[in-house]
Image (cartoon, rainbow, N blue to C red; front, top):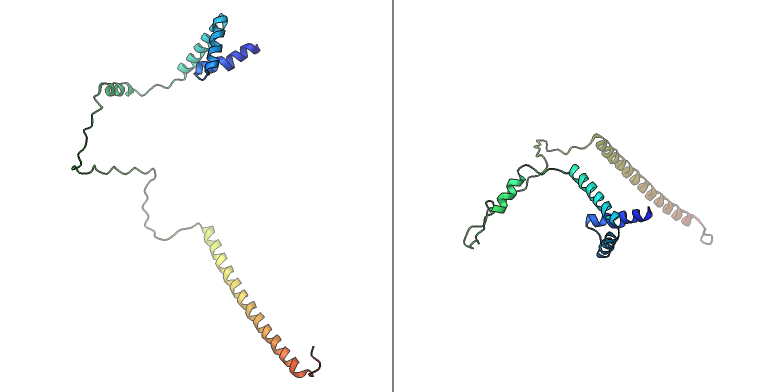
Length: 165
């Protein structure tokens, strides 16, 4: 069984699919000359493969045959003459059609989802609150520094000259 499995999976399938290397082809041809049962197996696999492919085949479009024969007969193919430089340039190709549908909008305002609008308003209000708090604490700290400087000056004026803290 292992020899049969080896033959089918490593030699026969790639050979029938056209994927085998030259060494594999030579080995298979040598085995075919020695073993007539192997020839029967190859014919059986080919028949099964052909049956499968015919069963799942997709038929070509009905007008394909006539189109091929027209091209072969030359009725559709026309020889192009070389263009002279004095001729007008060829017309511009038609722009490619977009897969999107054109929609006309009469509204010129930007519309956002209602949750984004709420979030923007909240961020705006919070930024103003933090700005006011920042200015408040800045001026408070500035006034405290001025008060400290004033107190130091007062202490230095009232303290005796020999005893400075």
